[in-house]
Image (cartoon, rainbow, N blue to C red; front, side):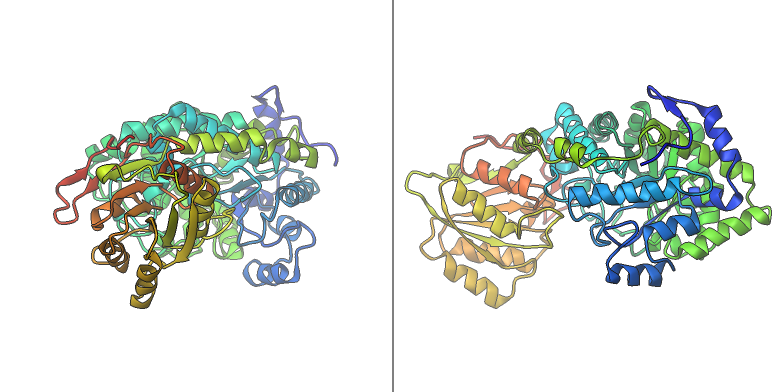
Length: 582
């Protein structure tokens, strides 16, 4: 598809002089563009569907990815499933190649850095037939750094095969707040040192697999009850608490050679007395991340469309203040024209210097060179078929998942369920929107997996907030069954899900609950004979839970977070490391 513009990397070594020469040929507009990573709708770089053209025109003022690159010279593009970027591996590869061709056809040819959020577990943008791994908290329950590294290496290799070279993972937040609405199972756990070890393992795995890893969300989003998508979270840790609780995973990521770190739209008064969001905070990004921790890699913002970064300042000020704070990449602004022109005006007006832009651009180009984009920006269908969703990768996912399922309650040895006479099971519970790549709602996936293991299993979705009528229906359906499996999802005190479990238990039919998201559900439930924590409702984790229920696998997982008592949250019901065995 044509020669690359500069041989900036040979055998993994970055040629900084060549990169500086490339920067020197850029116009100011091209330099500003290099700082932005933008969404774009469509499965094709040049010929998206009409609905995607309409979205692009409305939100960005262009028709396609090719027009976006030509107009704004963006340095990167982020893929989303909802933007129709990730239909299937061959399509993703073709889209990536089209984007790279557009970048290399500019006056100053530069390959683009294509990114996505492929955390695995509940956050995935690329679905089947790609290999989907257990999420972070599940890996935390498994406790194996070798499994965490293997999972990331497989995931990284598959992303690289379709042209994605920057992954916004692993999450380095330490989830010490059970009420955290945005992190939760996206975190490896509540123990800073255990999280640090798993973060380092995944950094090495992703980057050996061929993609830039991105630890997030600096300086640590684990202790908040506010979602930064919709508000401004405040973290009230002292500086000493931050150093003890939040810093270790980021320090470990830096020591492991992390390519990029993502900022958090959170306020930490102990780290910045001005109470600016960390994304816009010079004391946090320059003072702590750059100077104290010695990090000189790429710093990327979390999405600039999130409310946590937009409330205090306008959309025209946010990108300028982020660059002044020490950011390199500006991710997904709500209005690209406003953000791009604001940075351009800030340089022309003297608020930002061109030399400051050059510092960030050099870091970005070095990352692109390390990831091989100057040497080989394109991918092939043959490469996709050789790497993505292979039998060995899928087998690894199942093996890793088996070590994560955690058994918390098992009264009278209720589990494993006997398969001697093909027991008749009812599977009910919450059916939240399926993560990318799931083959169906959790109740359906779990029932199918149990049926394949020799049971007769019927699925009945009761939802995350079952009505009285739906609970009555489930109770009636339980009649004559040998056991009822209930998938629970973020059970709150006095919730209808809790009522469902207690009503089913009152029938006398043994009830087994499976927490398909946060493991804290068990504290809000009563009457069940057994409880498992699966940490997600993806196929791979539900299949693992089914094998544990059937006795085909041991429940090897151990809690990576403590579970507090419902009646007294100051007391621990189950500590970190708790888990039963058969």
